[in-house]
Amino acid sequence: MKESFITDNFLLKGDFAQKLYHGYACSLPVIDYHNHLPPEEIAQNRQFENLTRAWLSGDHYKWRAMRTLGIGEEFITGNKPDHEKFIKWSKTVPYTLRNPLYHWTHLELLRYFNVPELLQPETADAIYKRANALLGTPEFSTRSLLTRMNVEIVCTTDDPVDNLHAHRTLSQADFGTRVLPTFRPDKVYNFTSATEYLRYQDKLAQASGIEITSYDDLLLALQKRVNYFHEAGGRLADHGLARISVPGNPGGYNPQKLFEKLNKHESLNPDEAVVFQYKLLSELCRMYHKLGWTQQFHVGALRNTNTRMMKQLGPDTGFDSIGDFSQATALATFLNDLDSTNQLGKTIIYNLNPADNEVFASMIGNFNDGSVKGKVQYGSAWWFLDQKDGMEKQLNALSNLGLLSCFIGMLTDSRSFLSFPRHEYFRRILCNLIGQDVENGELPKDEKWLGKIVSDICYHNAKAYFGF
Image (cartoon, rainbow, N blue to C red; front, top):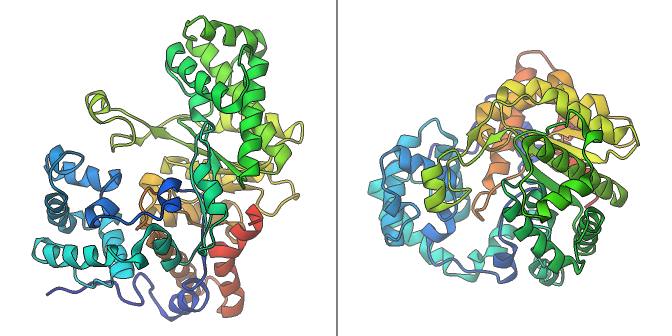
């Protein structure tokens, strides 16, 4: 039987990289400040029925790989039995070599279930049976899975209209992990029709208790929800955008007039939509700044490109890709507009197109003003870049153009409770990168100094930055 290639020194080339990882990184707690875990499942302390439900449900990374291999949708998101879906995944795994899925799969099997064997059709039934037996025990409930991975903080992604009941329940629970909400207001400014917008506006009115009859009412409703999140422990906001677009003539459009147009069930033209989005984003960022929040911007994704599958399965099912949008000028203008009135708060910018790595890594330096260490951050390698090459490129761009030592490190950006070994993956890559510099004579062989920088990036910088 073939055993795992993941040894104690996996990805660590050389003695110094190994010292950094084992001595300064591997045992640190995890602060996962951006993910998509369902807080209700943590509050309920869900027990997964089987490995398919815990591992394959909702994971569009795996779904894309299975489709590429020619596996039918009935075995992916369809109604085939869970065991059959897992067997199809086991047939896929050997063909994911050099894709991060291959590494993640075997890290997760090893760290959660102590399974050293490679997943393939010959081992699938035994692995499935072993994992299912463990998942049926209290030690593998959702809360236990978090504590098993030494997760100190989890920041979920939540819509402004969410009631946050799960978070309030969890605030009274003491199981070793704090679960905090993140304000994600995409639906208030990312919409394709007046009907879609008004449907959401009704939900916002109900959640806030504000009758929204004007643009000012809309801002008041959003402020009430920001305050609600703050009272529930939220200290972060997040925004998913293909790009931040700057209106050519913002003064030529009155936001109240645009609001009135939408409320007459008339869709905005492209120029009007840019203005509406820009003004709302700006006002939201000023709200965050007043409360001392951190704002995050995930930019660069080209979403829902397959209309046939979008109609069949909906969004976030594996039909998005990297976009090639122009980013620099508009992003600089947006950040400068906030900074010009000293209302630019702590900001993390995540980039999806590797061609823009240096653009983003250099941009953050324009708005670091000495008030906060690493106030504007070039976020960790995201989504399609969340793999060894992508992480190394992000770390190199940040090192070359900024201060790697101020970086707040990794996150999972995942919907799976089994994805936390991605922090280990990042930590190994980071330690190897620095260790190789030492081996090459490009950095001094100062273990204490470099070890502190590694531990700061893996844990302490985020702890201080967010004030957790």
